[in-house]
Every structure is written in C-alpha cells, then in structure tokens.
Image (tube, rainbow, N blue to C red):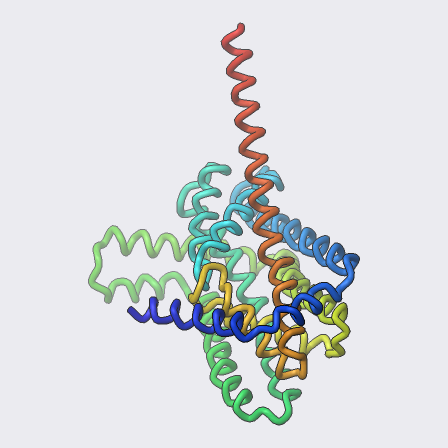
Length: 334
C-alpha cells in the first residue's frame, strides 16, 4: 500500500509541475541553447557509455580472462534498458546484468553476482564520496534557507551511516559472517550458499585491495565517470547563461540522483526533474529555465543513453540473426 502511495505522490508532484508550467516560456528556454552545446554533451555521454564498458570489462577480467570489450559493453547496455524501466533504485538492471553475464560470457551465477557486486561497490563508494563533499558545500553556500539546511542534515547523516556500513562490510571477515549465520535459523544449504558467496566476494575484494594500483585506478575511474555527469550539467547550465560555481553544480547533480532513486516512477521520472528544478531555484534559477535545463539534461543522460542502448542491442540481434541464417544456408547447401 505504501509503495502505491509513493507512486501516486510522485506522479501528483510531476502533474502539478506540468499544470503550473508556462510552456511558452519553457519552449523559449529550451531553444535558447545552441546545437553545438547539445552535440558536445551527447558526445560526452557516448564517452561515459564507453568508459562504463571499459570498467565492466576490467572487473570481469579479474575473474574470467579473454573478455571482449564489446561483450562487456552489451552486458551494461542491457542493464541500462532494464534500469530505465525500473522505478527508483535500479535493482532490475543489476538482475539483467547478472543474466547477461551468464548468457554472453558463460559464467556461473556466483561469478556473475560477484562481478556486479564488485562494480556496484566501486560505483557506490565513489558516488558517496562525491555526495558527501557536495552536501557539505551546499550546506555552507546556501544562504537564507534554514528549512532547506534542516533537510540536508538528515540526508548527510544517512550518507555518513551508509559510508560507514559500506566500509565495515568491505573490512568484514568471512569467518564472522559464518558465526553470524550459525545464530540464524535457516537451512544449512542456504547458509552454505550465503557464506560461499560472501567469502568469494571478500576474497576477490581483498585481492583487489592488495593490488593498490588496480584498486585506485578502478576507484579513480568510477569517480571520473560520476564527475562527467557534473561536468555535463555544468556545461549545460553555462550554455543557458547561468553563473554558478562547479561544486554547487556538482552538488545539485548528485543530490538530484539521490532523490531520483526514490521509487516513484520508472527511471526516477518526475522525482528527478522536480528535485533538480527545486535545487536550481535555491540558487536563483527561474522555474521555467530550471525545467528546461532539467529536461535537456535528462534527455542527454537518460533518454539518449536508453536510445543508444536499444539501437546497439537491436542491430546486434539483427546481425546475429542474419549471420545465423547465412551459416545455416551454407551448411544446408553443403
């Protein structure tokens, strides 16, 4: 029941925003950015997609050798499509990636879960680091909004707790997990599966942490990928003639993504745009201009990525079908 109430609330806020919007002003604001800006931002989004493909390839290579970049890219693109259809936190996309890793790369379920877990650990760690800095900066620089500052404090506390839990989990010993499982009344077979999964994850994580160069490179890559989103937003905001420091732009970017994770509508639609407009308004950006900025940014980072993912996988399926029919024809002819 609560889930449906959240959906209704998110949809209501989005509809309210649409009803009260001056669409004539919105159209003017949307058209006020140059095509060169849009094309440059789209090219940066393609760079983001490629970098994520590289990250997935490198992580998969820790467990399975001779992984092709294109196969790793396909795994992530399939996850992107399911992510877009999943409300809020993208659990569906991770399940799709696990399925594709098993299907495309022939890895077993435990290995697939491990790969996704490692990638998510790096991505979430780097994201939370950036969020912490953003929250602190936004709290310091947002003057005259005590109500907003009071909202930032519980978010900041939550992030601190989340970072602490993540750090503790990364340092957790497998034997402690086993001792904890012994105290829980579940089937021994399930206990064994959980313990083996955690142990395998920990072994690979410890191996990665021992290789400092590899670990710091992956962490730096994750941070850079997340920074690219703030860079794209900064370029977009600048293109609309809004004067704002980069750290404030980054803070708005990451806080918007956090709020967009709340499961209102698929892909965070509604909550993402509404929160971005609200945060921009705190920095003095007009509502109509804020909506235009949020819609263009959403198109570049969400709809364009969804379209690219769909087209790549669609043509990949078509080419594989043509190749299969051609091979079958040659075989029958011989």
